[in-house]
Length: 301
Length: 257
Image: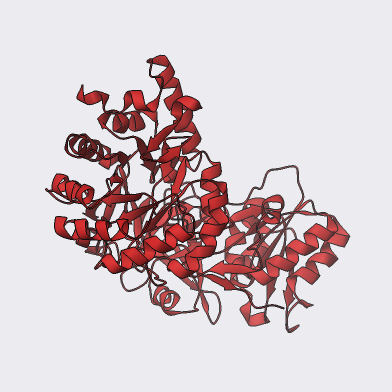
């Protein structure tokens, strides 16, 4: 599978598809399962300082074109997450996703993830449904820059920054992350969304709004990566609505060095990774791309 | 798939359990579940306790505020549901099944009893905790009961009664749902006696559809890879009978003994 080998900065991936944060990645055993399903890396659940239950159910529903969730960043907290990481890291690349409420928390969380042998840390500056976290921080370029540079000053592992599409200044935010020293940009997180139950005349989710993911958001994500490719010089990781080789190829041709898959696990199961890998490799062979690198950004030429 | 249905019938099964019927055009199979919701409660998973044409039901034991809320619903009220989710029981012909329901776990096995007519054991703490007795007796060739206090049927637990019936009838496979402690000892008995089994397990669920990973046992999603696991799958589940995860994903050990 050498044609599929890629790298995001100095993180080398044997396969270009990673598990997106929030999907089958809250326990060590489930991260191992996903690695064994053919993922090049698993991005962990976004972990915060303390144990957190997240939003009450209902926090998830399927919609036309994807799904809407408002899990609300549940997780056991960074201290307890040590044993999950220790179980998973011997099996492959685990990117530690962290969700702090300020720069100081992000630093503490990232330092722990480095200690737990994460191959990189992904800063969640984009979750649309957790108060005081995620996109509430990630839509302010100054704040983004200060958080990223604080984390960069504290860890040696690469620092990736996951951004939200719920802003009209995505390029400025990405530049702010780059100025802060980010090693890669991951885009996009979910689109802020809502589902109302007409029968009850009420919002369906307990949190009222959540984030849309799945096939419907793919063109939004591809556009974001295409834009960012022209703006920043650091590597890009594409995520949003990928479920087959075509989707993956679009993101790569828009400018991504690697990609992440999340919602497709719902429809296609963990097997989606081996399928995408296999089909993408076939496409590359058929169309004369010797490596992922040869495909990156070709849509700009 | 989400749907909103009107409740067509409410039956009081006993002092703490009610069955709510409704119509739904889906492909529900015995052993699957719905995520049930209406305003004023948390959405919770519920086994499907009847699959008869378009008629479906859930049988709900009152154990907290959400089940209390479901108990307050009346005929004609609207119920929100997502699903059916999960894999369900495998009732492939050519094998001799024994079906076992422990407590409110009887709700989950009842569609399998009605689809197959196989011999059934219903276990409960006491006579007043036995539910869905009439339906079981109408559908199954034989129905046996065990109660912990001996107030009805065999005096003892369902696993002890299973050992007796297995010795008499030599079943190929046991299908069961009930408290994990019962399923744990049932699994041990099946191992010892060389009987196959399919056990329906339970963990804290959020998405119900196999994406979020909150209900995993050793990487297996109870909502999607399960809730019914085979004997060989269960052999790989180190969490089974030992520990579960709370809503934060923290490990909670089961009490020993």
